[in-house]
Image 1: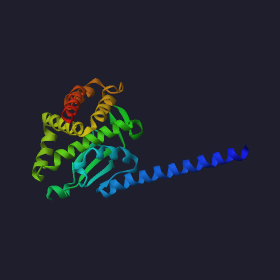
Image 2 (image 1 turned 90 degrees about the vertical axis):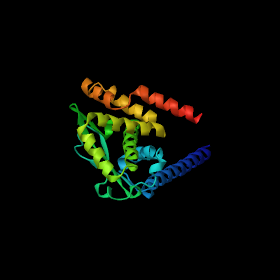
Image 3 (image 1 turned 30 degrees about the vertical axis):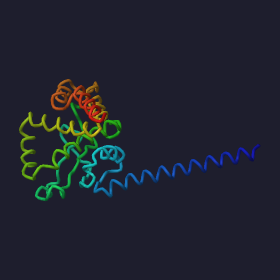
Image 4 (image 1 turned 60 degrees about the vertical axis):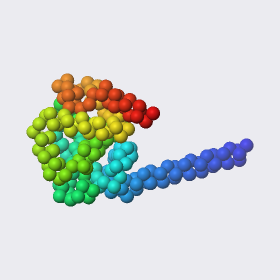
Length: 219
């Protein structure tokens, strides 16, 4: 009896080890797939970045670097083309997605540990939506885009809603909704900040309309 029990323990231990190795190998394959696709991703967010990028096959060969940065004002993330690439052909441009490790909104501190995974995927998906908005623009158009973004609230609204739309149309609707819920249902944030988000970005109702429209097209 003891011998049989010992063999059973050894068998399950061996099976668990094989499963763990397979899982680790799959993890490494996923991380390597990002590297081979001209992507640079910090280890802390590679899973969420992998999910977000998997929804944008058009960006497979686009160089994108996700980089932590301090003091991005009023935002958790920020996407922009690499300055040195503005004069290059569109297909040769590289892009940066800056990410605040810690940031403050309305006196409330946030960091990577306080942001749920789905919310992080939604934020990354939104920033990749900005990159989709950039890739077909000429260099001078991107510079003009940046100037208008800095000076016109209406243009900010147009750009942010466009990024949301790209993300939702690429199958990231549930993650974008998770991001909205994280902000709008956070009791520590002021109503004025929530109103700003409601005004500049797609509403949850608009997102659901887009999701239903996409389902209708597929069907």
